[in-house]
Length: 343
Image (cartoon, rainbow, N blue to C red):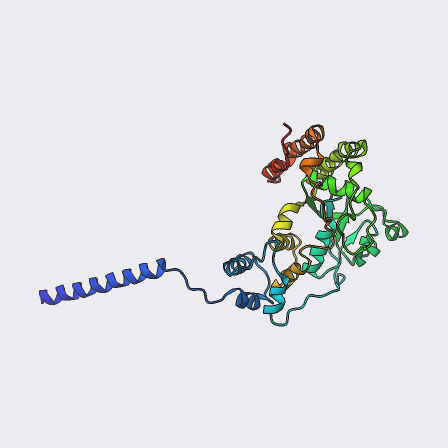
């Protein structure tokens, strides 16, 4: 009887040991992927995007050499590998009114390009307090309740849109805001180019030397005067929407938007409470470079164009913004990265 018990214990111990070994082997063994990038982008195409699935998809594709989130993501890959993939060429108006959201930025911070990305992602028109040349939604006053995302470069809720003035509307009631924050050295350069550009021969895109200020202007007092004045405008724009605006304000960092477009647009749709399918994010790749980026010559760099005096000026306004809203908006490190060495 005793020997029988011993045998049972030995068998039980052996079985337990085997189970432990199997468990250890399976947990340490690398997981075999069931799908590659091609299968994953197809499987997720019409599903609603969530953060977890987006991370899994990007990781799977990156392992196959396809960077869904990077600037070099190839739109041709999707056209070759996705079943029934097409991107709409026109957007819709709201079927149900939504509270207005300000899409605010200092000029030269990528507002036009961001609107293009938002329209591609959401399938909805965006609006402007201006009569912008390339957006159908800019033709009407935001208070007509057909559109809810409104471009502005002002530090107020004012509008002088012709359609709004016809309706007697001078102020817009924004429920919340999105501030596009860009390195002021680059934003000021972009705005100076816009104001002093050689007129493009083709307004659908910028060619080399078009949409740019001539080199002699950067060697003149006009450039220095512009920087001294506009750096403070960049500061006031940032502080108005992040400190004085008394409603929620989301910081959309231009540099992150360029580097991680899919992720940043997904986070923005969450802020806007808009659910989107994966194929809407896929369509962002067709507009990845955008039609609004100027092709700059080699001499046009912030390191070459901002001398010691101008660097001190711009650095000071960046430090001011950082001191007032950096910690509260979790952008201290970002703002510090914008600083240029003075010595």
